[in-house]
Length: 139
Picture 1 (cartoon, rainbow, N blue to C red):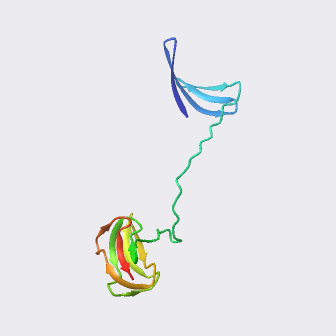
Picture 2 (picture 1 turned 90 degrees about the horizontal axis):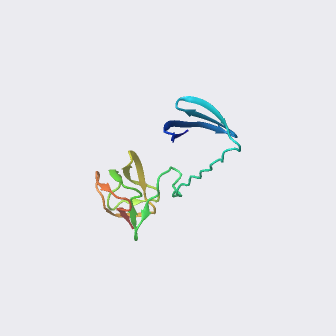
Picture 3 (picture 1 turned 90 degrees about the vertical axis):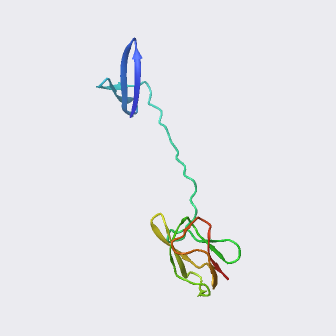
């Protein structure tokens, strides 16, 4: 629906185009409805909406943790650490749940990305972390 305002010979006309089908337009002029026949069909507008490419996610729709340097497990997104399920010196297996990160009112499990031993835990329960922040060092 499109609205137009025309002034012709000092008279104001408020025109609302309600719909157009082939060569017939249904319009309202100053509150009165009209069917207007056009000589040729109106051009159809094609609008293409593009979205930026989305990053691949794990099957559980959670971003996979990334690593920086040898042994560093990093935060996949900004959030708050709500639970720490390991301690320094623990032997961990790939896929083992190490931390719980709350982001956007959802709890996300942060799992070990390799087998190894926890050398350091870089965060505390309740800490706010940014995306890419080191969480745990595994060697």
